[in-house]
Amino acid sequence: MGFIKKHLLFFLFLLGFLIRFSLIFVNYSWDVNNHMVWAKDFLVRGPQNFYETQSSNVFASATPNYPPLAIFIFVVMRFLQPLIHNLYWWLNLHVQLVPSNVIFFLEKTEFLAGLMKIPGVVADLGIAYLVFLLTKKGKFIAVSLILFNPVFIYNSSLWGQIDSIPVFFVLFSVYLLFYFKKAVLSAVLFTLALLIKPTALVFLPVYAVLFIKIFGLKKSIINLFVANIVFCLAFLPFIKGRNIFLYPYTVYSKGVLAAQSLPYVTNGAFNFWVFVTGLKGIKDTAPFLLGISYRLFGYVIVGLINLFVVFRIFKSKNKKETLFTALSISALTAFLFLTKIHERYSLLPLSFLLLASLKKPKLIGLFIIISITSLFNHYRSWSVPAIMPIINLFNSMFFIFSISLINLLIFFYLMRYFFCNLTKLKNLIN
Image 1: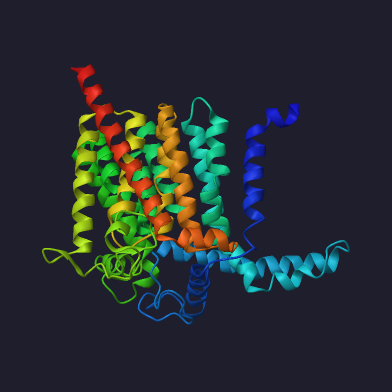
Image 2: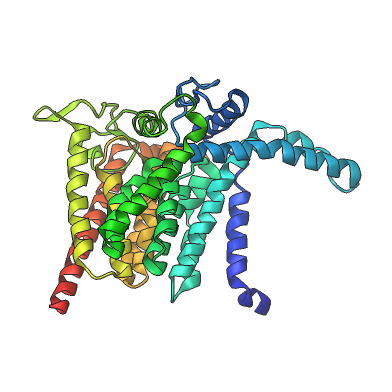
């Protein structure tokens, strides 16, 4: 026990990894099929016209709709399969104790699907380690709330989503920006987050204002130029014969952002729009009020809330608690009020809300509640393992309305806390 206590952090991470590893081959979602096919198409066809050519097998999306860095990650994972297979075959021939039957599993789609989940698993561990670095008191508890959080485990290890990866890069970039004033490296890391999944955009307003506040407008513009160079370079393998300055942004806006989600007001998310449309398949381009579309209403609501948040950030002192609360509000706002939102985006505010709660323990309750509602939302959309009484309950509109209401109440409480906390801080300064 003394040895375990002395090396507690190592054993926490080991246990967190083993739990995830035990699940990666159990099942996988429809989306993982896309990841595997995109990697195969990249290796077989090459990158030219990659984003314009229909996938060799169509599952959820006819053409690839993830940014380049995500595609590169999938390609690396697919490339690992034959390497692992050949290594195991060599061991099987030269080491008598190595079981032979495993070689057949290494050739199956289930094994490749498990490999596709590893980057998300590593990102979970990376987020936990950053939380450890950012925590002064209660380090092991804070780390455990990520490592053993069912939402993170379910999302990356069972479902096979990659939502943890952009969160890791955003958190890493904020860590370097806020604590070490590493402007270029921070800007590059945030850009990498955007190049993995556009969900990182929900953090951009707060990040950009913080960047300008710390470094000033001139240095921020220089780093914006650097970030754009990195962004364009990521598309370089796909550009042949095209404008290097226009093509990346065209693909990202039309081939990634516009095609990222199903075109409905809500895609299974327990958010504000549930009270407006239920979970009906209404397209978000349809008119909502005064001939204005649902999508535009969502943009206006989110834009106004973000204006309020970034204004408060700009006027406040650089406090860790304020920053992480603002980032969690931005992510929760996007989840609740944007259209075309999936259930799994409820994971986005969690890491930042946890960090905000370290100095204000009253917020830890919100973190736990959102973790629970997020898990419910994940399970409702992808019910594995299938437990029919729970599935029936989670599909009832009373349950869906109730969880959506809880999410909204948490949002309003968090906004009230953010406003009152900064008002008190301003009064103390004056």
